[in-house]
Image (cartoon, rainbow, N blue to C red; front, side, top):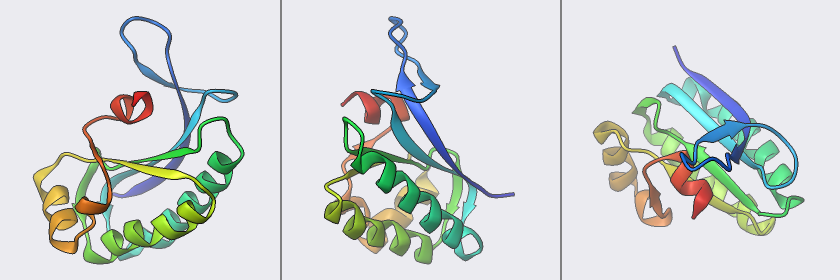
Length: 130
């Protein structure tokens, strides 16, 4: 089963530095894709990323995190959708940050050229705190 979720995350002030859902100042939109990121959910991803970019464009930190740490499979079309998301993000002065890690996902990011377009982050926490 695959799922695309648009979340609003904040950094907890606790020393553990956990990321927790929430809303308000200092929070960042996170688009999380779990399961298989293929043609079946690419439309859902495009909708979620458009909403996230719009939200980030009016926030104090113009950043959207795309979280692929729960993604087991990344199709070529999905990698192309990630690349295409950079254009509306740039037009809105929003930085896209990508988390991944699974070999299968990283491999597709590399062979499509998408990996070179995004600074690598291993966790949402790391992407939010940088």
